[in-house]
View 1 (cartoon, rainbow, N blue to C red):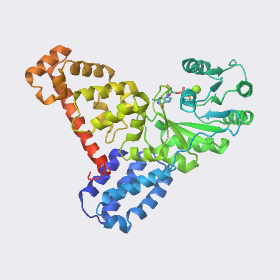
View 2 (cartoon, rainbow, N blue to C red; view 1 turned 180 degrees about the vertical axis):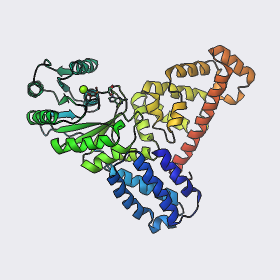
View 3 (spheres, helix red, strand yellow; view 1 turned 90 degrees about the horizontal axis):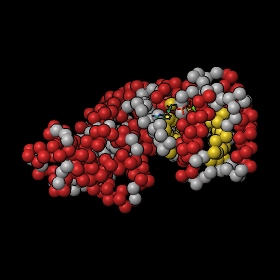
View 4 (cartoon, rainbow, N blue to C red; view 1 turned 30 degrees about the vertical axis):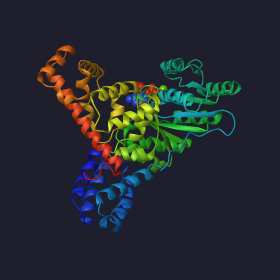
Amino acid sequence: LSDRLQGAFKNLGRKGKVSPEDVEAALKEVRLALLEADVNYLVVKAFMKTIREKALGEDVLKSLTPAQQVIKVVSDELQHLMGDENVPLNRAAMGATTIMMVGLQGSGKTTLTGKLALYIQKKLDGKPFMIAADVYRPAAIDQLHTLGNQLGVTVYSEGTDKNPVDIVRNGVAKAKSEGYTHILIDTAGRLHIDETLMDELIAIKEVAQPNEIMLVADSMTGQDAVNVAIHFHDDLKVTGATLTKLDGDARGGAALSIRQMTGVPIKFVGTGEKLDGLEVFYPERMAQRILGMGDVMSLIEKAQEEISEDDAEAAARRMFSNDFNLEDYLNQMQQMKKMGSMESILGMLPGMNKQMLAKANVDPKQLTRTEAIIQSMTKKERQKPVIINNSRKHRIANGSGTSIQEVNRLLKQFEQSKKAMKQMGQMMKSGKNPLAGL
Ligand code: GDP
Ligand code: MG
């Protein structure tokens, strides 16, 4: 989506002034981009109507920065479409908050149950309790117990021969009597929506009286995710949605459509198989991400969790400055390793597209080689890479057990990222939209 949109604005950006025809042509690309990203066509239609009026307004056409203005219109409207503000988890007015996961098989319900338990422990300072109510796949109960063990969270289960509605009734009663703050119910899914499943979920809802019915939707399923959301919402009155697997090849379309078609707020996004692969959903960030501006805020927040605030600030300052050297580059990569998957981190950086991600050092083996190369350099070489001539390259390649070509590749990569970050730093300083002038 973002490649496409950026392309659409390239032409607008080059011209000083634009005509209504120029804007129309760009809008046509926006429309195609949204449809390609599996956004529901009704949503696209309404969206285009709003942005056309705004983008063709006098303010935009007469402004000196029409491309920026049009991008702002598109970005604001995308954000608006996704709900403007983050909507937090619902809470019980008194006693334990009950959250029930619903969704198709494989959408990520059990994983989300574990992720939410961790989130509740870490961010809400709560004491979660998990109930295994998927009795159809024996492995499902074990899966939840494994997550419970990892997190030190109690899991309530009964045998696979028991009725899930009874399991939930018993589990909720136990959690309430033992003073837990959050009750997380993992339910069964099917490959397709069927009425037997819906009846069971309705019965579970009756006995659990959840404060939150969390629809778990797989972002990889595109248009289908929206149809599933509509169906579950009709039958269960869903209160929140989590869009999983956004770390993968996901197309952003579902995020746009679900909120529009159901009114249900997206509360979280899943960004990995591991338990820390969960992020609060921010419409503004998602809109920027879709437009390719990256998610610098998420990146900085994530970094702050892992490294101290001062370190992060200093690192960020250096990252965007002229002083950025190979030592910083190595540090940065090592921090990224600590923070989680490189792909999810790099994906948040502005201007990163699929091809760049594929080329980046996402392979941990590759990272080890990069570390070896940089560690084989002298301090002076790391701080001043320009001095690395052929004989030095030879020594570094020998020392790190790599080749001259690999050393060259690393130096080139370093130069490229230094250049990209310097530009970004300048744009942020001048408060300019990084997309301007594309
Ligand atoms: P359930 O059938 O709805 O309970 O789905 P599971 O929780 O068992 O997840 C199905 C598969 O999706 C598992 O392989 C999970 O590891 C994977 N998965 C779940 N959430 C995410 C996510 O956010 N990102 C990625 N990459 N994989 C996920
Ligand atoms: Mg499951």
